[in-house]
Length: 157
Image (tube, rainbow, N blue to C red; front, side, top):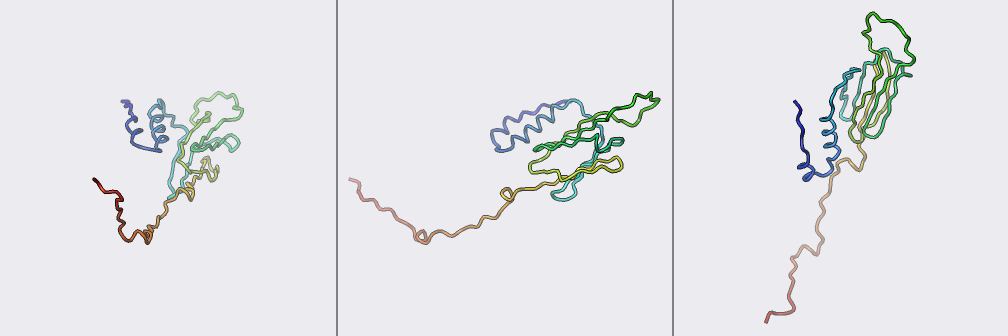
């Protein structure tokens, strides 16, 4: 069952959530879900994440990671596959492209490949200007301590 959501009423009453609504709309348009290669996403700390992908049979030269703002793309392409007659092929070595939408200020710290598992470390780094800050409440100027009275120079006739 497919449900199309109309976000138009939310656009009228919210400011700055355009990207989130666009992501929700694009997620609802996904027709086929490719589940290969399998992967895990783990939250290690408040601002630390890790993606682990099972890429058995791929070397680090056959894997490409591309980082763009708010997007991580992992691609795997086997180099020069030998022509063999397989009686059974259970180890998938096909070309893949997996996209991960990243939140604002999430950066890729590094990647490693060990035992057929590709591990990508991510960290959310919020700039100082975006971090919450305390606003001090100041006192009013001394001349405001007494109520002001405005007198009319002209009198009504």
